[in-house]
Amino acid sequence: MTCGTEHQMNDSLICPLTQQLFSVPVLADDGYTYEESAIVKWIQENHTSPKTRQNLSVEGLRPNRLIKSLIEEFENSLRSVDYRFKLDVDVRKERNAIFHINTKSIFRAHWITRRNAPPTILLKMNGVRAKREASFCVQLSRHPHIIRTYGMVEPTPQDSIMLLQEYAPEGSLHDLLDDQPRVPDEMILIEMFSQITDAMTYLAHNHVTHGDLACRNILVFRFNKYKPEDNLVKLTDFGLTRHSSIYL
Image (cartoon, rainbow, N blue to C red):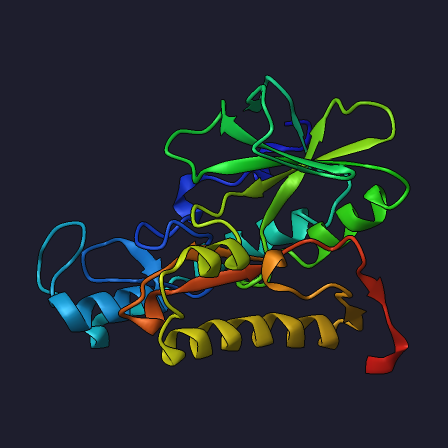
């Protein structure tokens, strides 16, 4: 990467349970840091450490302020135009696109400089709206229910932008629902709706209108038809997004 090493994301910022960037990191008595909601649920169900199998209690959890400060530093760096990755140096792109529509193509990508990193994709965008959409992707990336954008990838073809983003293994909510033999339980749908509402509320607080909310623009990172709390969805596609005065 062309930015300084102090802005590089490392594996210590990824929860070993959720495989997502920490939001509320807590340190457990086993010496490991976890996402608070994930480790609380784990302890309530298993009573032991997922790493060492020693006994753990919810009361023994305490905030990891160091990791929290590193997370904040990393997320602030996402807003910088200097936060860029080099193609075939930091990340490698697969040859064939896994998705293509109009001015957008999505490719599976693989980290070169990081081990055991979460799966990623490269989003290639063309056209006059590409820079604006890329700006929204980076600026809004810090919310837990909005697709995480790690940065821009260089070099890019003329009139194109490539963004490095997290990969949603379950695909879009539209495709997931279409593939189900029956409509998921209403508690599953309520949990998903709650997460989407949380993301849309965040946009409103930032005076932003998404402009194209639809199931095809909701990505599913975890799906469990039996446990509502195990589901995770995130908002994506900011092609029609704009700043709006209606929330002022």
